[in-house]
Length: 325
Picture 1 (spheres, rainbow, N blue to C red):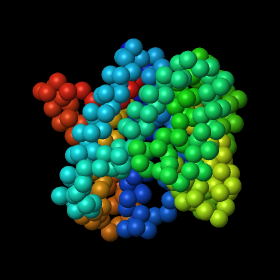
Picture 2: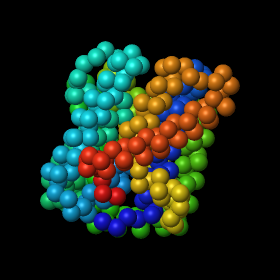
Picture 3: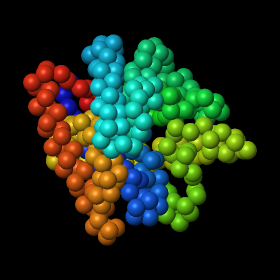
């Protein structure tokens, strides 16, 4: 499938946001950071990634079984590597090969497997039915405390609407609709207001709602309806900020385009690199310089690891692939 620079640029920007969000999150206790940046980025980072993944998956000619098998191979391999690394090198987890609960960022791969399976239903059902149903499922899932991190069930339900929107984007001409001048101005303006509100009011939405892996019982067992209301607000704000994000993406090829073509490798390795720096406290005392250095080191090292992984792939003829886009 021919690559589209616009989507590669979007993925390139998203992976930079993800690295920076993880840098600030993991070093928050050392540098005394609050969660403002992570909270704002949580309204579009993963939502847009799933949207793009679904957009290309809907057009892919690769059989669904092969896509799922590739995802499963990648997940099992990296779950094993990260478990061994965390247990015997960093000593931050007990050694066990539990493949039901994904390590750190690997939940994304399990959710993608779930979404690929869901396409059996999506391809046979009207978007007019599935889009509302996907949001309802995301809202209802919060009422079940057993839907949590196991097999990434909670996050899969919470972010499912954005995958569904991406899957039907071509049929509904959604990208053309959201890129109209009027929608662009409105969503960017509201996104700026949302950012200002997050900076001013730290408790606008609890972090547990934004992460998507917690039930309403985990958030506030005494008031489940509050959790439901907060997730509704999360969905509304996510749609607005995600539309604004897609309206700010450059369409011409650039260095972001190349970066966007390698997001899987960067995504898989950046967590281990950042965990290493933070666990071993290889951090400068100066907060600004230390944060910037941590970000650039993580970025550079992930690029180097990407080149190494690609070389290994060439030698072993093993290919990791999540989406075709």
